[in-house]
Length: 303
Image (cartoon, rainbow, N blue to C red; front, side):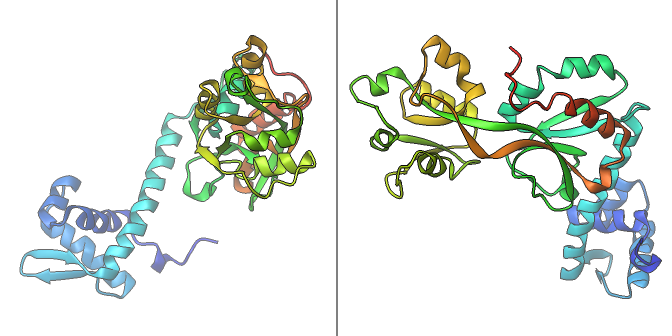
């Protein structure tokens, strides 16, 4: 249910309030909004009357916001930006719709991108805009219709589609272990370990899966993306616990060596996630239905 009318002021009055907070003078606001200063004053007076509270200090011809009004303007600014963004998307979207999708950098590039040309062939009427996000977020504060996330599909207020389970394997540069014996999982504790911010428990979980009590010696350098941690491993800075599909080519060419015989499945998986409020959006339905046919976690990735 929409809030009562008294809590929904006119857009012009809110624009005047926001601009006064940002610009600091009525003359600057009038110039930006192409209005007279008296018109700006009337908009602000109407807003005060509707809300029943003082918002503006009037010192002769100078206008300034009260502290409460400054806080109000900050919240209004975010709402106005969302309205503007939604309006722009409506204006620029093709008839079949636009899908604004957040992707994980590595998974998006290596798993999703090779598949997207087929979707474009089947649905040329759908436009997909993509931006990268490393961690889950609140859909209400981001302009996305859906996202590819890693985790356990427990994001409140959303629905999800499983895309792929993740399997990881420890890898390093050959020179790092040229003079070290690595015959069993516990031997990795003597090597420098590389960590990824989005998987802070990855090494602890891996050692636990392999029967190694590893409450200590799990310190090491931290990286925010798989692209950078891969480079660190390639340059001999330590052992990285990597998704197998990301290092398959480097292992095959000998640039990296695997320190385990087989990959291990992690607790999390990759999902397409969307807010319940967007579940019936036509562009999302087409993308989701098509992606369901690609979600084959055990199949090898396209090369």
